[in-house]
Length: 155
Image (cartoon, rainbow, N blue to C red; front, side, top):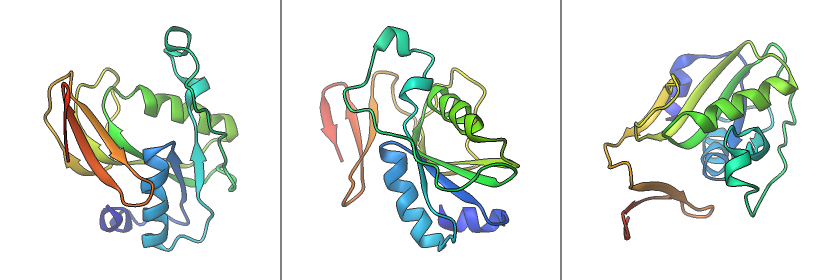
């Protein structure tokens, strides 16, 4: 993923990871790319369009954007892209801080099942799994991708 992001040659990007897996992945990418800007993190809980139906997540983390995003190139990082709703919520939150010049979406896994027209610019892995399967990045120490096939956990 770092190589794909380097090839895009964005001028002085600001990297932002989505809690939790996206933030873990963003930490690693931020270090590998040796970015000068400080790493930002987002918790999109209050920006979700299903907030009223699913309620408050038990662990809401504060968002932290230490760099100004106004007219900057932003690299938005998440672990798993599925419906596109998390990314839509993250974009809404980023735009509440300012209007970036560009937003590049980098994801570890694209598992399909899109509900919104959102696609990753950088993707490490595309998986075809059943709708009932769950794909999750575990961490934060050693990052491991796990797929739960309707009850059985596989690494």
